[in-house]
Amino acid sequence: MQVQLGRIVFATLAGLASIGGAAAQAAPGEDGFVAVKGSHFVRKGQPYYIAGTNLWYGGYLGAPSGVGQRARLTRELDRLKALGINNVRVLAVSEKTAMKSAVSPATTAAPGEYDEQLLKGLDFLMAELGKRDMTAVLYLNNFWQWSGGMTQYLNWFTGSPAHDPNASKDYERFMAENARFYSNDKAQAAYRQVIAHIVGRVNTVTGRAYRDDPAILSWQLANEPRPGNSKATKAEKTVYIKWIADTARYIRSLDARHMVSSGSEGLAGSSQDEQLYLDAHRTPDIAYLTYHLWPANWGWFDPKRADQTWAGMMDKSLHYLNLHIDDAKRLGKPIVLEEFGLNRDGASFAIGSGTTVRDRFYGEVFGLIQQRAAQGDPVAGWNFWAWGGAGRAANADYWWKPGNDFVGDPPQEEQGLYSVFDSDAATLKVIGAAAQRLHGLEGGKR
Ligand code: IFL
Image (cartoon, rainbow, N blue to C red; front, side):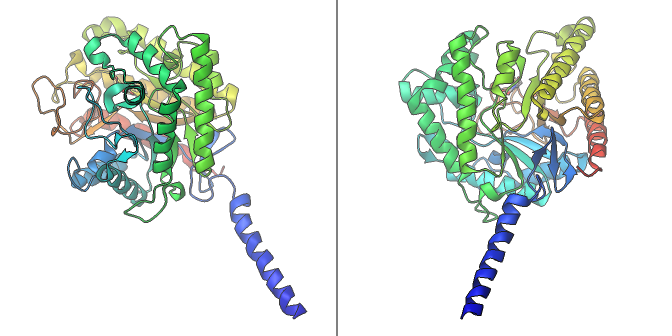
């Protein structure tokens, strides 16, 4: 009996040790989840770099009915995979809204009401990414109105009209109003309910819980959250930093296996306050820094005067990239350039128009990232904005309407503004070569 008991005890202890060992002793990234080691990403013991794109509508295409186009989605993923793309940044949650410049349908029809067809679409997307050994960044809200986002939460809980800045043309007012989302208790409770719903979901295609899915690279708080408008106050900044830390901690309490990221644009989305940007990314629950680069949106570049504005734009862009990489160094965390883009030649939206300037810009951006990654800086990669693939604009004015194809440009912008289409051969060549160069850094053991 004693021997038996001893054996049982021994067996139990051994079992516990092996379970505990798997959880506690696995080195970062050994279990197939992308993780941070030092100030770099690792996966399965190898360095991992993101050569990625933005595919906000990936979950929409995956829906089994309605807006779903599964055959298109699998073709797009095959195409991206062949190009060397290993990561997509995806809108996981949208809010139903009456605003014209927003996508419909939405994953959240009303607080607590989910569109199961669209969530099944996300399931399908995740399953297909897993098959291709690709990963996704899933964002759980949007500072901008094109998916409902924070302004829609405020509409639900304050009754204030969801403000469409495309209609009012008053972005400063929109941003100031939107920042009230961070301190609205009811909106925060509903947002957390959605997060719990998605993070706690079991994929209907694979049967695997989302929290166990290594195809998720990170949960992201929101697309481009900002503390307020260009003149955000100290109080607003404090609320914003706390919201990032608290939300990231909340997500980690539900799912400690995945990384969490902010979705910040960097200085351009931080009222140009570098300290704020650093403080927002300092919390240990935020695994890496994010930043975005939008020269035309920020007035650094005029696509109709490309020759005259190119040099100044490039100076500012390279400075912006270097500054954020240096910030990542200061925090000792990796950094991902998860959005960047430029207009087609002459500011055209037409599919057949040239992309000479854009291709040159992409080349410069890829070049700088590659150079800094190769010298060991905490650069984890890039996602260009955005994959339009086989989608095509249907309307003469290039604006999306329900029933039209989804492309990389969401419904608050003209379809063709920044999308890279499958017919953009020259751009695809630049992207493919850059992806290959970046993956070339993945060989060594980390
Ligand atoms: O479409 C925009 C998107 O909302 C974003 N950043 C910039 C994109 C292009 O203007 O997140």
